[in-house]
Amino acid sequence: MARMSGAEALVALLVREGINVVFGLPGVQVMDALDAIYRDKSIRWISTRHEQTAAYMAFGYAMTTGKIGVAMVLPGPGALNTTAAIGTAYAASAPVLLISGQIESQHLGFHRGVLHELDEQIDIFRYLTKYCARATRAEDIPDILCHALRQLKTQRPRPAEIEVPYDLWSKRGEMAFTSTERLEPIPPDQEDIKKITKTMSNARRPMILAGRGAVKASVAIEITQLAERLRAPVVMTPEGQGLIPCDHSFCGGNSALWLNPFFKEADAILVVGSRLRASGSTQLDLKYEQKVIQVDCDAGELGRNHRIETGISADAGLTLKALLQTLGNKTESQWQEAEVARFRNQLKKKLEKAAPLQISIINTIHESLGDDGIIVPDVTNLGYWCDIAYPVNRLYSYIDSSYFGTLGFAFPTALGAKIANPERPVVAICGDGGFPYASAELATAMQEKINVVALIFTDNAYGTVSGIQRRQFSGRHIGNKLHNPDYVKFAEAFGAMGIMVEKHEELGKKLNEAIKANCPALIEIPVPQLEPPWNTLIKD
Image (cartoon, rainbow, N blue to C red; front, top):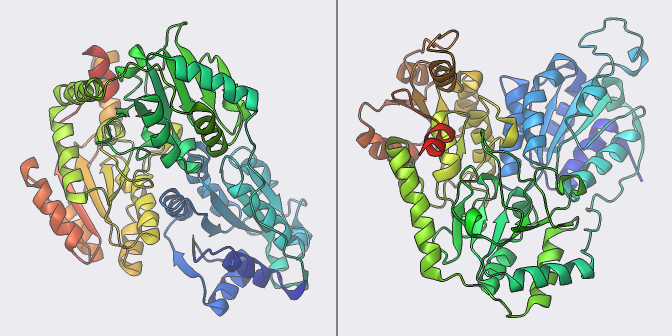
């Protein structure tokens, strides 16, 4: 044990953990912690213009590294401002640590109306985190932080929140630092492995469906080996993209709102790290004779959204390794590589026919970014199409908001991704409905030299809302029109690069210029009212 203050204990643990950046807002209830960061010199502090965006930046950092992203805020309004971002991290299974200051210990529970007081703030975060706790003594700080760090790395990663009354930051005590190593992963039952082996090796049309859980479990190699051994196409959810290269012989492409043709053909589907949740207005609907085996470290997800034959609550890495050992080279698969390629191209052509403008724009963006780029699509029309059509060949290159569908998350999330990956190009795909949520962070981008490119597709409306009102409410439009600034001048007012793309054919050239520029950039691209994929594809 070492004698130090609560703030020094916090910083020492973060440094021991390899955490080198914290996003947040300074203020009275965290000033001692901030001063400890200043004195230590090992951690970069980035001040944001809103607490929500601080948490989004931590989310972007975590989602493109697999490491823990950290945000620090004040209690009450500050902590409440983070909830949309923490909820997004919860939905997306991201390891985000929120450190919240708290009012002085002597005032807790007495409702005296002291600055930023929120009665039982911690109860709000119980529904948004995997673990939350409040320190009641200075010596509690390393204890609850160690436990939070361990939970962030164990099984399914989800956010953690800790609260520290601000008088405890400066108090000194004997601080005990316990282990933050993740708990031992859960191995599969050998009888379950035998059952999976029999089902998948005897299948004539085996298929693998991989989601975010497979990414978090770092099983890209095992997924590829299993696909080759079973001769089984691998279909990925938007969250699982990058697990197998798009040009691999057994890449089955994107789940595409569950409309991917492989779903109809498969007689046995091995699901790794996916909840099988509804996507847009569609959900997976398989025939009774199609066998579904679901592997997930979270037992609560087994069979939640679809009937399954076998559910295995175990670590995906240990499960796939055991399966590969037991399987050998036996397979009854009738899939031919040419047939897999034909199905893959069939889906590609379907998308191109349904949305020629969107697919052309997506292909242009990918050509500019290459496989090394990171893309963050917002809840906007181009973002919806990116979810099912953007080619991803590298893990930790694509971030979405999962089922939370958080409008406005893309730009600040992209800033966090760029901080984590300064050598990689990062692009946020925004609409004019979502970008203004965090547009003030352009100041942060300039101040901290975070050279992200934001593509803003403008149609002067909440486009999805307009479409719903047009189709379902006989064109009775209300609340959907938007007045936009001149985004070129808006960017230039901050000192950033501002570009207007009048013709879509110019986008590639302008995007390349923005990526090469040594500053943040906004590119405005006017578009007509566009249809979302769940309408276009289902009608087709």
